[in-house]
Figure 1 (cartoon, rainbow, N blue to C red):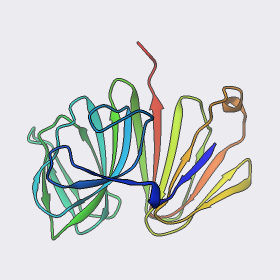
Figure 2: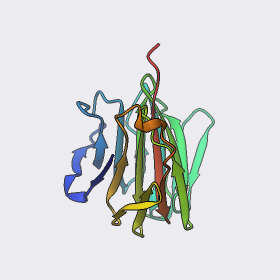
Figure 3: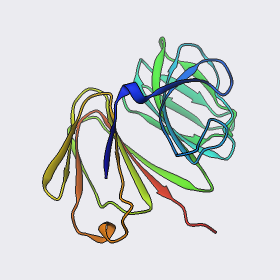
Figure 4: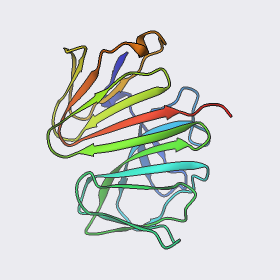
Length: 201
């Protein structure tokens, strides 16, 4: 049900446009840079420039370090990320240009294939407890920037997740997904991600 992924399991891979590198935290089984259902990563951006083309994917980008990043999607939409855990949602096929506010930044990326998954991303700066019911069509991830996270299930603590580690929660048992036990993730400066598998048309 719970998997904790330490930084040693993360992979460093080149950006799709070849202009930098990203740290891949997790990707669906069998997925790769050119074909995946979902992918979580952290990138360091040190120069202004165009974003890689990820047509067919939805992107969620969270500022996790630095003074800020301005995203111009060249369609009239502009996202200004100037505070810790500010988030932008945009089409991966947009011709997005990123401008740094005052020096380099780091961002946390959540990308989903529009045909197979959708993502709900919530960021919590202050101490917060997020409640979930584990369902077979969902994956839940949690990542904290500065503080240990506490995870409870059925009112019992099942894990304390260190800073910089990625927690993954899921159930593969349909009967378990209908139980009333609630999973609670508590912490601050954390990113909570729900990946929801879309029904096959």
